Image 1: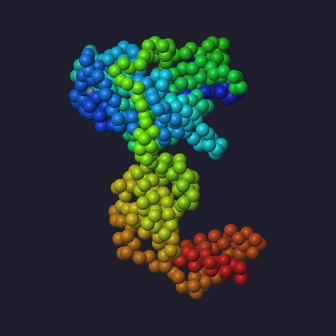
Image 2: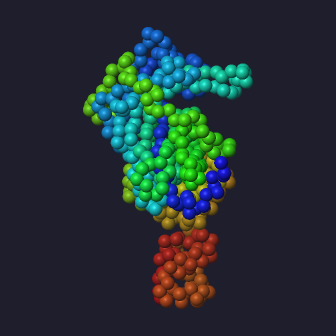
Image 3: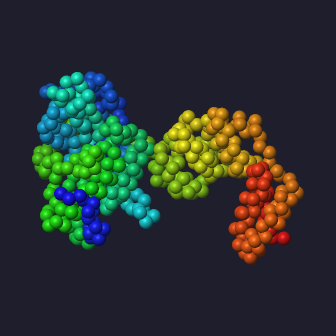
Length: 492
Ligand SMILES: [Zn+2]
């Protein structure tokens, strides 16, 4: 096949991609879905197992109440309707990491349906992406192909993961670009983390993604034939695999062939997908109701109790913070990246005279320096108390922003917190109006052109004079007083 990137923009523009995502999330319960074994990543292989999760004859599954609570919590956070009575089903297939020969899953009566996530669209508006369903199931074990002494000759099996509770979240085929898929996953992960139902650690396999993608001529009434790209373990790979797959399928169609329905895998080293097997049809799994488990009945009381545990979700939190603290959208996104960061900001911002200033100092002054040094907030020389003090001093015009920068420089040079440095250095501030006026007069006399501009109606030139006097005062001029005097003097 020729390189997919040879397609011209005109050809690409004729087609519309259709993307749907299936996300498996491991739930953060202490024990497994249907037995009392520890649900723990990184244990010695085959130590967290029992007859039930190995499917030995005579053992029976018992549903973990906490797993239901987490799945219901995620369902509500994703705006799904939770079904009062859902059914567990056996999904039958043979694979070395599945000793039972089936997974307990849910099929035609899943726990929850009809949800949605709002994502920011490319044009600045919001796009609502549907969620078809959220159902509960159990994870399989893991084949280990390398890293062990005899890996050259054998594949080993670690069954610790068997029976780990999963929520599978299936989106509607609503996404039209790889970027929308990226946004969906980012928002989904954020919501799940805020709810505390999963650690969403992709490196440890706590969150895994399969992508369904097809293309059709723009305006065509029906979807094209889709390919499924399985086991994508980073959002970057999802985006790259979708991009590749879209171009590959367009190329197939343009060359007069048909896209085959199949399962493909992403090869990150070669930056392409390749065929794994032709798609199994759903009936190959021979689903039937799990005979060892009764229907799952979620009472209204249980749901009401669970709903109380729903935190303020990231989207709502951003909207409130923008309104309450007058933050920019970008700043609100940065401050709410995790629930812990958002909690940290709000706890301290509420102690400050201006939460808005706290955001500025935190993101611009502190954030920039920490990023340059590759440090996190925990290892910052300036504490949050220091950030609040700095923001208050700025707000009260006791220091200028230039002085703040100088003080922060000292904090980072000496590894000291802001309060200590401020107490020692106590930067001088010129708040004597006559002294400032004298400096302003000098700058006005030296810049007749700008004075003429100001008097001609270009009042923004005032900022130029403020800057010049601030520089002449070595950053010591009281900024509020200076700005007031400059306007007065220019108007004379
Ligand atoms: Zn077990």
